[in-house]
Length: 115
Length: 113
Image (cartoon, rainbow over all chains, first blue to last red; front, side, top):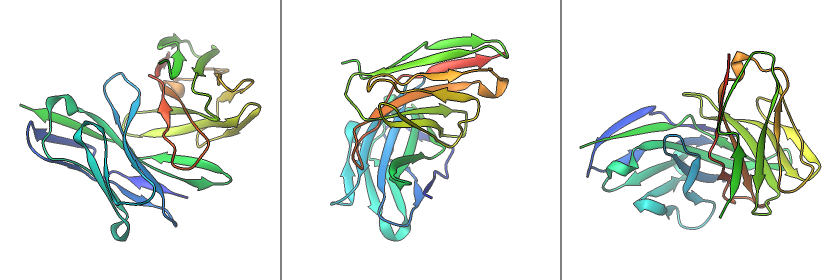
């Protein structure tokens, strides 16, 4: 069974600083990997996803993520954080399990942006 | 552009009461899901459906029931509400096909007192 670990529960960065959110997954084959963002009181919105091809994936709002098979990681990055990026971020791994496509979410990383 | 629509947005239930969370999607998606989100726990899958008439249990199905009579609708039923079911519930859907994006509703905040 697949699993996802987001080791940082809470991260604080200054506006304009760079950001990296960590995500490690466990799965026997090549997984499908996602990053979702959740603003307070809202549902989850897809930032980006990887399932083949270039291991550096560009997403919305200036985010990117790099799939590193050797490290079983899919870290999310942004070169310059804006105050509106304050939200909770979820990494997810998708795979086939028992004949259906199962998506497992990490426990989330809450991002705080300070002026 | 409705997407995935959930109702109600907020509800307070008394222990032992029953209720149904409604979910409908207008994207003709095959797959539909119900998740619950608890602080620090991420999202846990309650039930899912791969098409009309087909449902199956996820990770945490106890205390819940679902049905999928149409492609569009996937209601979640709580029969005897318990305080442990206080949570935020998300309905989601996606097209069949690996790697396809899951689209989420805006959530339903449920408190059982």
